[in-house]
Length: 309
Image (cartoon, one colour):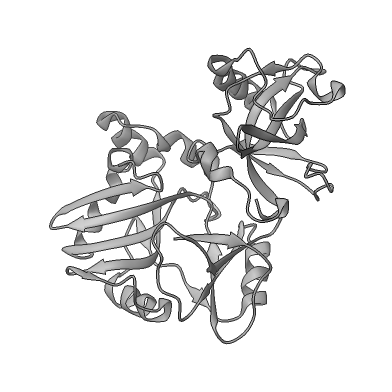
């Protein structure tokens, strides 16, 4: 189940959780075995051997949560997590688990002892979850709150991504993006697909980004700010094998946008922080945040309005 972006809802019918900056994962517990699955459905168990101890929680259950790496201030660090995400070699995964362990933030319970709980209201699933799962060395059930503005203030104080508001009487809708879950970010951010890049004062002057539409990408602007020297090297390495002869954008770009551009296949997803949108959907004051190897271009399709990215 996925959240929509929107303003912070209010009223007695909502609960509020902090938004964790990590990788969404389902944990399937069966006997003494734990299997982890990403949003795409791919199995990612091998990457996180330290979560094998989840088996002690229950003999038969399905959990939903976010895998994070916490820094010294107990804040999620996506940069630290990125090194863990695609490791499948057992020896390397074990070494990384010792050096940079993850924590599984469990926020929902979908099955227990063979019983499907997805039709149960959120408030009841949450009660069962809190009774079932004790705190562990590598997992916890983060708190849920009743005061939305105070939760948002806490997210701001601790420089977390934001808040997810959940309707108390809502069932869990697998695979659906529902208004029963609303994510509220501290800043306007969105995930966009890179369709090309152009040089500037440095070799990589700006990324040319867009949103998937039938036939290609809708252009959303040039993103040059926020790209450090390390990020520049990583982006150029990731884009080199994607080089293409033609633009993936559905409309021809203006000369000032396309000048010197190298086109790429629209496969790399990046997160961008920005101020506002222009009437034609372009990002104002965009800054590169990070690559999103955990997301596919198909997941970057915009909602009803451009600001719902």
